[in-house]
Length: 434
Image (cartoon, rainbow, N blue to C red; front, side):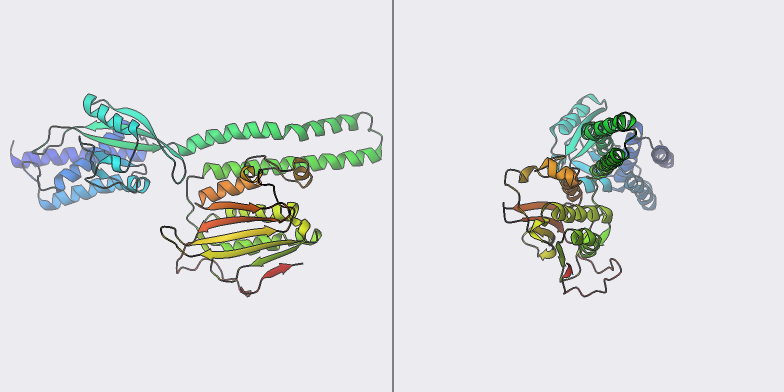
């Protein structure tokens, strides 16, 4: 075949492959056809850019242009795509794959970055049979994520040493879908369990008001007050269940917004000041050194601090003091600099056997006291899952008769950018509400 004809045919095949990949991307179909088309476009760009080029190579400018188009196509695929050769050595990977597997390196075995027997065995099977297959892959660090891995064989490249197929891996993230299903199941189970008691109470009082207490104004007012309390309890329970479900649904996605932890703490202390005054508790805030910058979701961090301060006021306020403080821990070894938010009370403390279970859903040290105070048993579960999303830690320290300290530890984010409008009040003076 003449060189010009061969170049035209090869260019036409490359353009058709890339066009098919772009069409599939626009269509939003992550099927194996799109996978093979997109990956073959990557192979075309890679082969054309190497010194061991086809027998009749196009001009250098054409090779660079095709390679650039192939790279752009792969870079715009939102899901991870990895190309390996018959030795299961990485040939190419798009940015999504590199973000998912930081240890992924070109010309290194895939097993160095992806330690999954199911996936590696699947590649071997595809190399032997040539038929595509699907398998699963689960990561558990820093949070659990589930992927469906589509593995397909590519035709051998037209290179001097060709003849053996390469293999492409397409990882589709199923984490959100699985979390949504788990959220639905948990919500139904938890709601049906926790709502049974207040609904039974409401039903009983309604029957009483329709019967014996129909003409008793005093009993009617008393029962209506109890019914209002039960309805408010159900509302709080539903709100907390929905908040917890939303946080769990996004737990695998780290937040990217830069927020100031000091301003969040100050806002919550000011909002809870009336509750502290009503109970005769001194509520203080000590945050002497700005800034306290973290990558976080402002609403979720507000909920974290709100739950901790409210818990301290309701269950540890008998000591007359709740102190909120912020601190900083410098980097040490491989650990980055950290910010610490502590909420300390001088109340009765918590027995050691209860501490490991405090973040479980609906776990209460004193069920009667919790319900009397309006608690739903979900506050610390929300704190735990929100901190998991923020890559933080939650530490509870308590001794019976010595009070309780609940500590939130978050990675510090250091940047020269302006975060929020500056707080003009002095930062070296503790904020106190008598």
